[in-house]
Image (cartoon, rainbow, N blue to C red; front, side, top):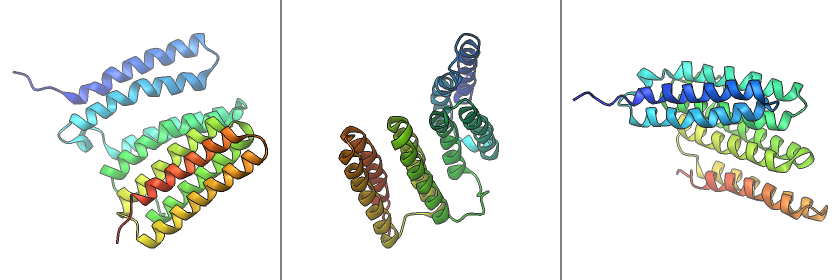
Length: 216
């Protein structure tokens, strides 16, 4: 009997994603949404191939995966800015880039000069910036982008630097919970309680991820 080849699954996903992307580019004016759906079609097949592969890092070379993620995310973000939809562009770019970054963190060698703690801080600041910008331009999109970036930063820190020390964990959780309460209070006071709940939920979720990452 022939051996199953899970590594072929991404090829199927690539064909489906390319077909949808081509259709969307030809018949839709919302190119960012086209990219988002195309990535949503592709990544489940890639994940299947990685999970079922006996040695995924030899088939899906970590550096190449990371480069592909950034080469897809950078023009997507730039297009969002040029098209006047920077927040949605940031969301789509996060969806494109974060999974390759986490894959590289799991299987590849570090390529950033930043320490794991510094990378976590940058990721959390970026998530906070997306949330703050979303409060003015579109909180649902900003909250989704912030959640992806923030949770990705926590997982990246775990992969690269191990579990957080309790002191660092406590500071991070306190900042997230305090920020969540502050965001809810400010937005509720301005007549936007639902958006306040969304912003608070994102920060509390990130804080929960940090709380689960405690070490000695």
